[in-house]
Amino acid sequence: NAGVTQTPKFRVLKTGQSMTLLCAQDMNHEYMYWYRQDPGMGLRLIHYSVGEGTTAKGEVPDGYNVSRLKKQNFLLGLESAAPSQTSVYFCASSWGAGRGYTFGSGTRLTVV
Amino acid sequence: TQLLEQSPQFLSIQEGENLTVYCNSSSVFSSLQWYRQEPGEGPVLLVTVVTGGEVKKLKRLTFQFGDARKDSSLHITAAQPGDTGLYLCAGDEGANNLFFGTGTRLTVIP
Image (tube, rainbow over all chains, first blue to last red; front, side):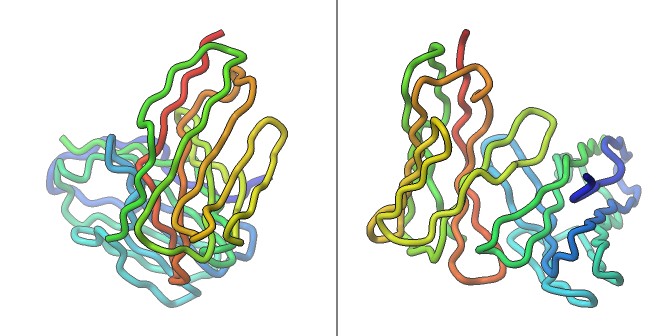
């Protein structure tokens, strides 16, 4: 029973390094999302996709890029990591916003 | 940026007590969802409410959507330690994504 799988679960980066977070879903959902969760600030939308080959900016897109080359995968890239990007990142997928999200278990990223 | 305010932010109660958490906004939502998140995990969907005034029950949890579809409440009867977690409400304005509240962190003490 997979659902939404995120890799890696933990990562420590040095300032200026780059990395890619991978999200994979096996539910054939059209919509996929990347959120970050910080203490006291809740879940904030970074980027989202409404279908294969499409992406759109969310509330806090600066410093991040995404790609949705295959329907089941949604990649989040950090080109030059900054300490302000230390956070827990969650991927989610759905049939549509009103249909409820299925979340992955998160990636805890620390930038030093 | 839409604002979904949840209250209280923190709640610590004894096992067996009842509690209510609130989710308020100035925006009208086509639906509102409640999630529970446990430490180290992603949020898990509990319920979706769609109609103004709607009440849904999930065992000891009762969810209500306000008549004007701007607010919602979650009532837990006879809380148990397994109810401990972060409760998040999320509103759907009919766009492509949900707006999440900042959450209520509930601790149920045995």
